[in-house]
Length: 161
Image (cartoon, rainbow, N blue to C red):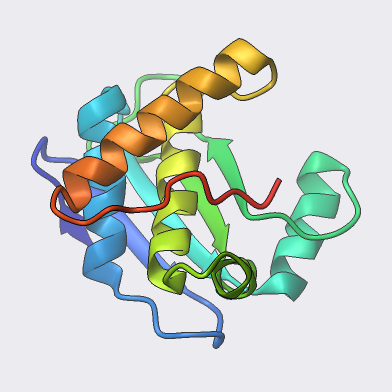
């Protein structure tokens, strides 16, 4: 666990073996998305999983068969959470990031960080259900990724959907 710039706690849990995931990079990506889109009323949990666990979560919570890149869960309902409470959880699929990165010839870490940013933006109110909302989401993703690596060109159009 680490506190971000705004004092928020970002917890990272790695439950997969596809590739090594640097927790500090995940925290920075989540923090950059929160800095861009606005704070959450509590802490944030980022969970990195593989295909099997993501398929189970996708079936249970989205009622969709198969895997996906990211799921975001708003946990801030009810009374105002304290600083240590978790306001949201983002679950990202490292195995999908690895395969999509190979297909698109970009680094798996960058693809995974895109999934983190995308999930955090969802928690901050960004959506992608219409063309206009999708365009706004892509612009926000690109802006956040540029903040993470301003000198490197990060292919932020890599999407698995």
